[in-house]
Length: 151
Length: 336
Ligand SMILES: [Zn+2]
Image 1 (cartoon, rainbow over the protein chains, first blue to last red):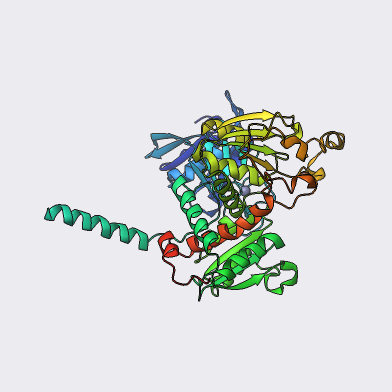
Image 2 (image 1 turned 45 degrees about the vertical axis):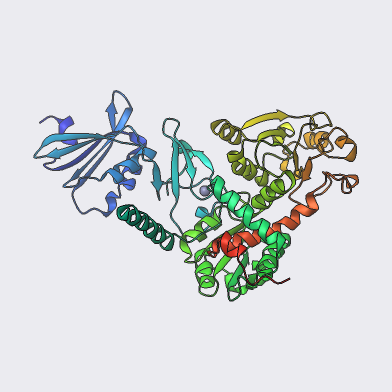
């Protein structure tokens, strides 16, 4: 086993999330609520990557994310790839689909919006998946998904 | 024959089941009302104009919650409720109401829901009425939520247009003044999409109609023409001129404000080429955008327009409380 391989140990069963832009690694971890899990988790960042320059990798043992959980990643890292591992083998690869609705993931950038003035969950409709335009369900303000903050 | 009757009966029963399980009727935005629903509400308003005083809401309690003061709108809602025999509770200004200090909107709404049958609420926060409608067990009427929506104003505008033109179809509607921040003009575009209007947007560059509404028009095949000039020739083809206020605080460039502040003022001389049926609307209050010499002109309609708000709001209360047009037509509680 060479040093490169040893940096991220192989897992028997679980999910490997690869091609995370390095600076988004911890946001991805937080969107997937990894801090709430009890299974072994390896978070690696700043690995050299041909495409991204630097990338992050996350490995989670014995955990298979739901489509809803995966779709949350569309906000920060739409191009990540999830490999489903069973018995040390990659049995499936999943990419992120932008959902039609984002619930409780991003903040509305309108300070006068009810969602910023009341303890409640945000809801956004994705109006243009290519341009990344979302519209707040409450104040109707359209915003660019690249400029919004996470909840 | 039996089978046919049976099928008919079954459809009717299903229909009734749908009605009884129907969600409560809120009035939060006009954007999702269908053409039929808008015309239905206008028919209701017509009935209320014939007989505004009734007891059709006797025994009901209406709450008017004004988290932001607006005397004009509150009086109109409260008059509508009173003239239909309902009783009114509520507050006119949250600053003088200890009950809402530091409380979340949700808690205030749930508290009032224990007492009232319907809530008409005004709030300075955008989306407040939508959220209230999601947490409240009783219907919510949006009496204005910040710069976002003011659907009862929109309904009274539609009723005023219908009443003066005899139709909502195929009209030339001129929107004048502040088209950037004016929520009433935005609602009007959305609501008129069913009726094949031609809009004319007359505004200074800095207050021009925002792109998103122009895109909305194109997506819904609504014709529009933009103007920066405002004179007798530009408006000669109008059926409706909808004036709005050009407010100094909306300008980032005060030199631009000084340049345009007197351009979007309508005076009597500009009406010389107008069509006979043309009416001038304004959501009020006005400052100086309509000269006082217009008030006595037969084209002026903005004072009567405000009165139509009473009939529109009577219709809104009834819709939210499950009272149908038939109920209103066969109403035995009319007070003459
Ligand atoms: Zn919002």
